Length: 116
Picture (cartoon, rainbow, N blue to C red):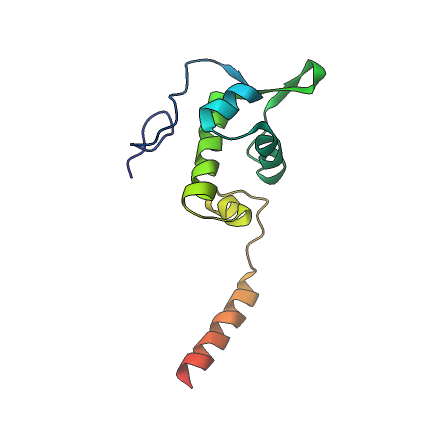
């Protein structure tokens, strides 16, 4: 798959992102084909997604956040990742990967099973 400058994958059917500084949650929903309640949920799950909030708690997303939302959508809907898997894939520092020692223990257990 070839990535384009606007954050889309070549051949995707999502509309192009206009050259604007800020986007409302409704505009982002249309650009990314995601409902606003899903966007609000993703804000809680992905630390990189922090739209500015202005009067009345209205959300305003910047261009890079729209690109990020498209990437999250791709990981979840097209590639089949879970929320935690998408978090790890995006390099979210709040994602808690398994510690080295527990991972080592699991691998050793697998080796014992395979060698018997």
